[in-house]
Image (tube, rainbow, N blue to C red; front, side, top):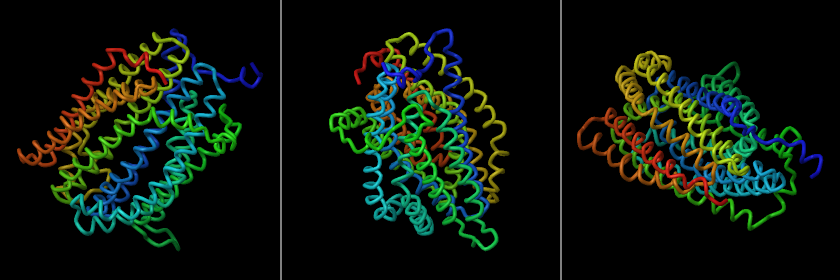
Length: 458
């Protein structure tokens, strides 16, 4: 074994150090999630201060299309990180580099393809969603500006995921911090105008997000191809096309892509129902979603940590450590959800007022949605953590099955029942999502207990 290889380290998998390992991995991921969430919240607050419900609705509805596109890269990142984690845990470092290089190459090609596909259809999409003309016009502009930097910005998802798979959660946190700081500063300057810079309002919000995402993608790629990461990729890892390795990445990601298609189509149908409630209800829903994203911080951070831990533990043939890691992350995550749920119930109205909402109906609806959201936090967190662990093990089929069941049996049918048939409006929307997340968590836990994820071949 060469000296370079001997210097590389894997995650500390000793049982007596497991809590410390989980905290070391999850804290930077939680911080990264917090930074991302704060930017979404700041964007929503800045747009909310424009006192234009159509602008707030346009950002939320057009974000649905961007979220759907982002799902493809999330799917690729999951398969790439699972393969990298297994190789890294088994100390096959050159194989990990090969996987990382081919995954980045694949993501760049996919980003160009999606940009060319989505730009022409953005207006049609917003019209089919039933948005008012003002929402369609503003949303189209917003989407097209975001897509302009997608060949760099979408790759950020893959690059950060690869770094986390090696146990390096600090650099993705730093990159996200720089990106989000740029976004906040640019958003304020471009939305409201400062000095010679004109007031651009929604266009300014789109430009700031697009530029910041491009900066983040460029930084992540720069780190991967430098000596600051143990991967130390070279251009040869991209130029050397390995069709069999690319197929392994694609094959493992196929269930993730299927899950993405199912969840995105289900969400689009879900949002079509929400849009039918009117612009004010749609704006309130989007504002409540931004506030609820606070719950993603501990769940996503712990899921990311557990995915890397499980992948490397299975690569090192330590199944007991993988199981213990899942149990402990669930306990930590759901404890945080209980506390956050209390904040939503007792301080929901005060949180909404921080966004400068002056429309009384919008504020009341957003507050109601936030309080109902407390019901779904444990289910949401449990799904995030267990799904992350299964994907870290290479089991991408189970999360797809759970997403399919949740979308077809709970999310869309219960939303239509509560909202349209029973006439509960936005209250019905959030009661339906609480039902959906609770049922998904129970189904996911059933598959986890069966234990088939421990024998998945990647």
